[in-house]
Image (cartoon, rainbow, N blue to C red):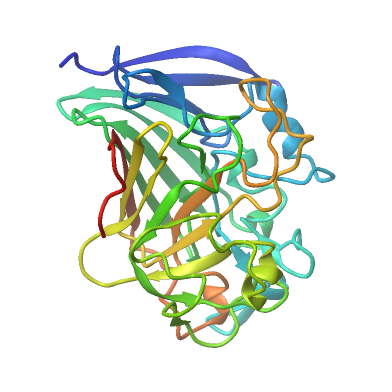
Length: 363
């Protein structure tokens, strides 16, 4: 097997700063393209059951698409981006840490979402290219100053995208702080295993290794304790087409206009989820060190978004599997803690493998 290669090219400028695209891949195998703007996975080409390469993630063809989608007036969709400082929602944009109340910007109704209006997805990161025996990688580094978007502490974050010799995409996150703070990082890639722009993902068969999920109120903030998925449209333990129950009148599906919830991953093996597209035969398998998985079925994608292929993204054009801690954790002492203190290291790793299968895997 040919060893994976790493190349860099200029992709544009954001506020006068050069933005580069890094390509990790090998001939005939997966090819991943990453931007140092927002840590975005711009495209990921993988072979189908016939060996034909196709892009299986949603993105924009040029930098202007990402910059325009990050403007305050835009209906942001975070295509492929690193999310921080805090992925998901914080109720009321407030939390208390060590007796001090902090306020962070509201950008999702009465809540703060994905780090606020100028989160990590809007920044140009410093990049380091890596070539070693474990494959090729690009390490992105961002220093977020004390008070950035209202969060305390100077946070130094590293996100490494690695294509390993087994053609798996390994995303490793590391962060340190000089003062107590809260941190919750993830990647917001949207997948369509039939091919980017190929239509909706409702026929994709999805399996999530979770026996419980977090029901939410009307604002998509977790309400009460996690509940069993048994007997609900949220039971994906044995693999179910994404669209099989998405239109049911379940109150939780009505709230999010589909799936936009946190699943509590079962303890034990790091296996989190897998998805299979019957048309292409592509199989996506996901492992993570995180306790939660936010599955989002692309409910708010609209036709005014034009993707890398030049085709529009309609509702359900892609799905996101966001490995993370639970929403609103800073206000929920019963949830796994997201507090990071000086001398500690935030670390998580999420791995994606793209293979093919003629039949859906058996859970």
